[in-house]
Image 1: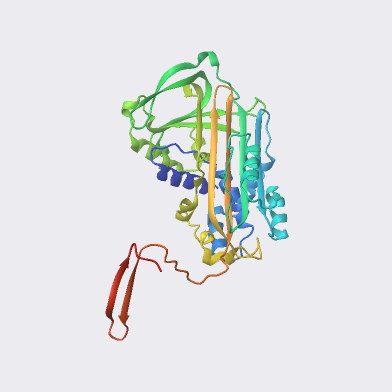
Image 2: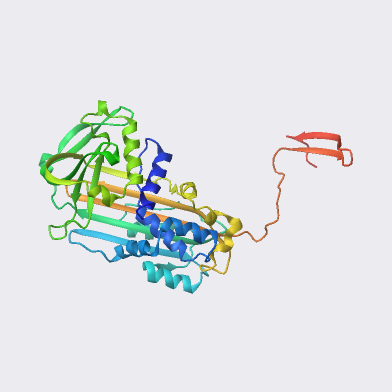
Length: 375
């Protein structure tokens, strides 16, 4: 997970450029772990997922988060399998490993979207559109993460500065409401590992549970003003996150009295249109699972040949004076291999026609059909 999370984040950030990004590496990791339960041993898909997920100890550590509780914090992981005819052994494993619920495959995405919305307290209202899922869909595997935590030391709303200026990466300005606090906190100043970035680390939960969960807010470049900021600072920060474990970065922090101004914000990603992780995961080395020609590689999931048609993701986060609320959902759509694998050419658009003498290759006639007289 220590390698998977920053790599996934860096890949999505590279795709989005200067746009907003929000994702849950935990949700994606758990979804891939669920897929892994159904793979054929020693197949290409099995090996590729193994490299992404790491050792069994890593998977066990991530899965143990299901049992974490803390006062002042609500944290839930949920998994569901929507299918007809998957192997009972796979369903049992999914239930044992991830507490998965299982449901019949519906004709539309509506009940799946309702389940996602319920698990995420409405932050992710739907993961798929309202349209029919169409022929060929044999299974949908869904994983959600929900978090809501109060700050251990909450911001005083009376100190929030309304209508302050927030400068975007392109230099344009917008209005933001900046929460303010001066208190003892963990900070990182001018981290070499993050290209000179600085950070504040704020604990969630009551005083008795502080330290279990924390919010880390990282300011690129370590500069005091926007005029000194450049896109290279964000690139250095993202590069540092991709190469340095978060636990190592936390070791750089010091506890001191400091001041922080942090905007109240709501961040959404992949909600208006689910974000496809297919190309991202392919670049990370997961290719065979998407290959219809290798659909036999999920033998532990189904007696039918299945492949992953797409993996989608959506996430939302709200940060205010009281604390933070965040949720994400990931979904894998499994399709069955087409029954007839023979080539099928349908001449239902303009085409070229040639009549030729085979032995000499001489064309007797050559034509381009655009708007002919059909008979």
